[in-house]
Image (cartoon, rainbow, N blue to C red):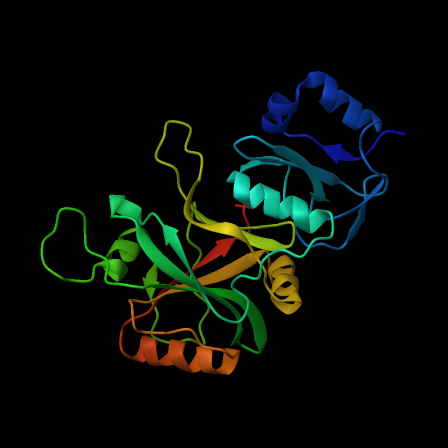
Length: 272
């Protein structure tokens, strides 16, 4: 039976016309599935369904998602990430990541800054009576501008140049930042993407998890409801790894009061 599948040109190019046509005809596509984004059940016979192809160095995995969650696309990830995703699909527990506290992960900073280690913390932030999914980014050491001498920290100026805005009031939702997005796939956090610099303009990973990171059910539900993630960033020593969301909120408010916090609202990857 034909399926209500969306197969993007990029996915078709990777899997070939023959395989894509078989999927659309229902030969190789499941009727029911668990959405690779929100992890809730879907039915490709009853609702629009996106084909999402995860491509690693040696392995490729075809997954399915509600079209309302993410569009059909090719997602390039490290082989280690892909194997972790396969383990989550087959029922093996993935390694825990940034749930209540952050995990230091290497990331390439914008404007060509040297590679740095960023701590990523996920949590829910209350704004105007509504809980918003948030990520808090904090380097483990000062970030110098490329080619600049001295021990200055240019982390916030670099981000402001990219469109992040200073936060003075945590009760106001940050503005949207064009070209950036947060990749939440297979129910886990994979990367923060920034605008690409190549001719095709394809997004590139600004921060990428070595292995997909777990988030709480509440965080994932809020992200899939709003299709937006608030990303806060502060210089080293401003936030710390807070074990509870109320303490994280206190640390964010203190950083904002001291002029040491910037933020932006980003869509889930593929929705911008």
